[in-house]
Image 1 (spheres, one colour):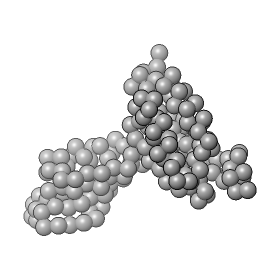
Image 2 (cartoon, one colour):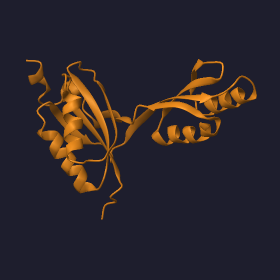
Image 3 (tube, one colour):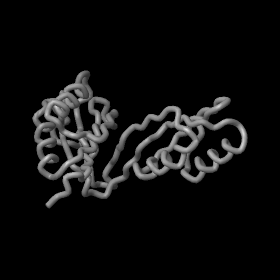
Length: 180
């Protein structure tokens, strides 16, 4: 029996037109699907965008989400890439309390350990950028929490299947009709 808390990673290729995100997110919300994260961006083909979803639920929930997405006219293709060999990233920007002195030095060491970057420095705080697997980003958040998180934003997971496991957007059947 499948774990009901399994986190599936879905990749949807959609037409890059106004309203697609609102339409898809509205459909998912109206049906009560638990979407853990959602990231959207252009592909190598500017007429297409890739939406990466993390869907929480069992196989039945996953299948329902896929079927609902595939019914939407602007959705070109939906793939569950959870079982594939893929590269994932999550991007974090976090502002933490770090007055000049020893605290700031400690923070700088943590940033180096996590291979991040300090992207802004103020008199009493620093802004840090960390990217990597979701678990790495979460671990960094837990390590800096004692310093005092003033503001935090994350992209959510994005992912691509390694090597030839996922056809480029320009080679997906049906995409040529979008350019006609």
